[in-house]
Image (tube, rainbow, N blue to C red):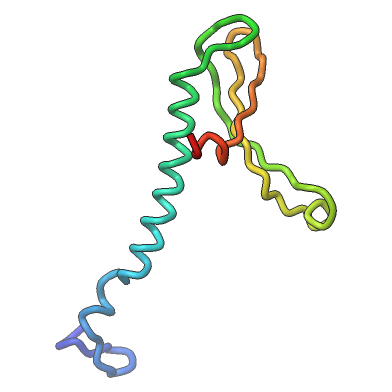
Length: 104
């Protein structure tokens, strides 16, 4: 670009249009905070995990999403999200509701 003029359309290009939008940065930071919260929740579960069946302390953590009843089931809208920890020794699974854990 020559002197802040677009070579294709010959219109002036302002400097703020050349930099990433602050609004996009705000949206990305909110999304990254949500992702960090989920990672923090997984880290908390992993650090505090003790299998209730065999007392082993290592687990694998994954997320599962499920539909509710009624219309959400028909439309396959999965708005119930849970974390589950599988014991690496015996395979026993414990399910956690992140919404309830976030309130603690």
